[in-house]
Image (cartoon, rainbow, N blue to C red):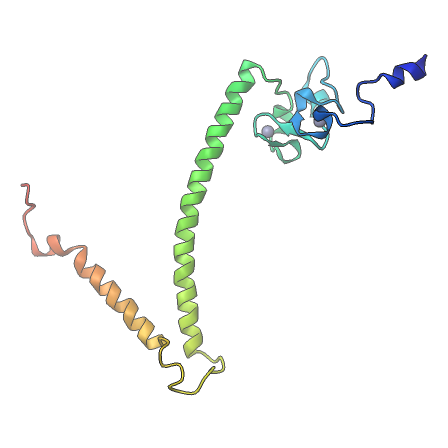
Amino acid sequence: MADLDDDVEFTGSTGTNPLRDMPHMRHDCLVHPWPRPATAQSCAECCAKCFCYVCDGPASECKLWDEHCLADGSAEWVRKRAQAKRKREAAQRAQAAGRQVDSAEAVRQRFAAAADTDDGGAPQPAPDGADAGRPTRDEAEVEDEESEETFATYAPCHFARGQPHPEL
Ligand SMILES: [Zn+2]
Ligand SMILES: [Zn+2]
């Protein structure tokens, strides 16, 4: 009779089972059926397709799996999931903002590096005059200084001359 039991086992290896072969909540895992009682220890074991209900990512990437493995979709966990989502979105926004600053800085660094190369020990790519259209290091520096001066006079202008505020 043991053979018969094996044949009807729900987790048999034939066919595709969405709950086994597709990402699923640890709570729904068929490879490691939800233990009762559910404890941090008994739930921590998961399969490759288990995902963290709270982090909304693979369980293997969850940094709080000891805790999150217990998520069973109850109201308490729905709340934690929403909380984690808000946190993730805030972090993504902060990262996106940081990336913009980085890229502006990267552009300045590339510009400075290019200017250094033109003046540095690197072999000159063409004889004088052939690349007259490209800005030399000196020209680039002059451009920088010009834009700095523009900003320097622009920003503190009102205060330096002591003009009254038009609305005062
Ligand atoms: Zn699983
Ligand atoms: Zn998690």
